[in-house]
Length: 236
Image 1 (tube, rainbow, N blue to C red):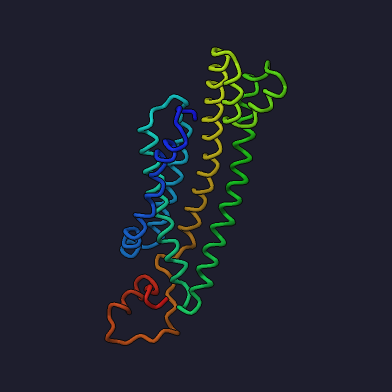
Image 2: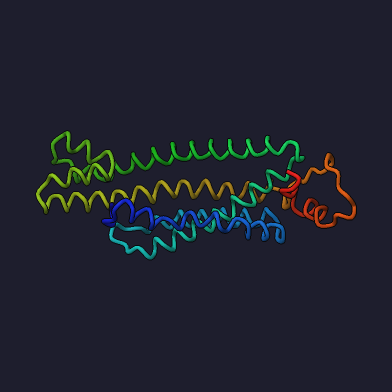
């Protein structure tokens, strides 16, 4: 909306985020070579860097910096999610892989809910305070609507004279990019703390628990997979 894109155009513009699904498998190979700790720490550091860059966003910025930003964000996510999941799944014997998968899903869902609630509330509060002066002269109903979200500010602007509506959308755009930068900076700080935690406590290799799995000595590939990285899919 800030860049004048329709919903479909905006969705296609953000499609780079889904690219992280494509890079999970190569990241597993990197984790096997350099260690899960290093790869996940690098991913969280890159993730925090990309989130911090939103402080530089402006309402009239072109799309290409956003494209690179989405690309970098997706790459960082891939460095974290693939090796992180493999680390969880490789820490339990095969018969308990369902428990590990459930715990992995629960932690993601809880963290996602908390992150959305905290960062979302912060963003909403900052936006309302940033746009307050620009809508102070509007009728109360219009002022409350414009302070609620940038979408409702656009709806209010469409009912105003052209010049006044343009001024309102400009103010809403600045408030939106400012609040987004501040909110995602908080998320970046959380990612940095996560990187320190990973560096301190995450084992460089999944704690492969293979005591309950019968392994033939001749099956060198299977044994190497368990010893170096965790239980292979065929045993889970």
